[in-house]
Length: 499
Image 1 (cartoon, helix red, strand yellow):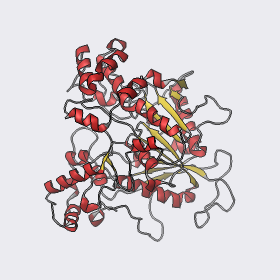
Image 2 (cartoon, helix red, strand yellow):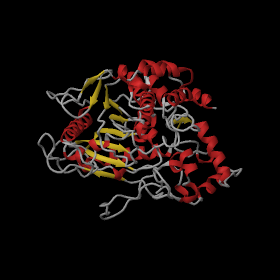
Image 3 (cartoon, rainbow, N blue to C red):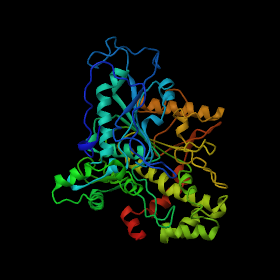
Image 4 (tube, rainbow, N blue to C red):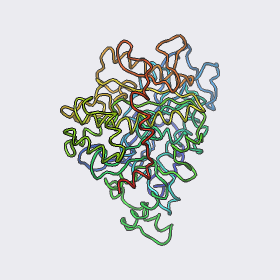
């Protein structure tokens, strides 16, 4: 457990035990604040647990996986091992837990062994200070420790340690991106699925509220170290000796650390050190990433769920407000953007602005990254577009502002959420489960002889219920990605614009 003297240290293997350990219920979730609304922290610092869901019965090829060899090696009867899928949850590196995701469908229908992982969140997972050895991204280190555990133990659950697929959504997708470009993660996985969180994901300044700067999930470690030193001083741990400062920080009550200000401030991944030497999007451009097949995707209306929560305080009520928002977020490019996204093409000005933000922040950055990936590895792109998808997030609906295919709304099609799906949606769910698990098994989402076929990037597979709902689309043209490529600015430039 990363508590007391082990707080803000790299994860260590669990202490061995004798006999049978009761693992029938999930372990504690990591310390976090409520995703929305008031409330204090919940969870525990003793939270580094993972959950394994394995299929029962025969494998998809009709065989029954044999018992593990005593050392966890190949089964004595030679039966095949199943692909292993390791899930990193979303939540902005602030919330969430592995046990919130029930992968019974992926295991039972797809024949995969699925592992869901907890990792330290917020200030507990992404804090940095010179006295703590810099900015080692403890959250990513926790995930890496889980991958080492999977490599050592997958065979005992019928899994193949040589067919490990990372997949994650939102912050989990950003985590997968980080492992793709991290030398420290090399060799720990063999495929990657990135759902709504590519390496180039960003959000322009003032996109949601007037006082918000640009959002970029990856920041130079010097920035995090500087903010860590300032936070330590405010917490009364400004000590001249590094050992004294570290001891003071590790001695703080967790409730003093789990504040909205500290959890939010330390929710960004640092680069520039050994585990993550290069900014991830730049590493992709340079070809400095693991040579593994990749699936990447985004949802058609990603930003609606985020914008909807702020419309009451910062409305986009008419065309004038729409133009003002474009100017505030995109400066001199506003006129070109308005020409591509005329307010008359949308039911409301707010929906027009949501389309702008979705394309600028998620869809086109994903396709930009896929071009870099596809130069070296097999790459497959999707766009989830079911605008009648159930609201998985639980956030309240906003009158006159349907969420459509928003951020996270593809998750009920892959995990057992208990939310009702129509017959057409269930059919889409079965197809998506097949694509995901086939990719985990072979590195190619396609089943020989089956249709619809998923072509490689730059083609994009649209995932929508109903006849012909799964088809190839020119997403780059539909989402004006040539425009966004021409106006794309670096996070540093965005921050300067905000100041």
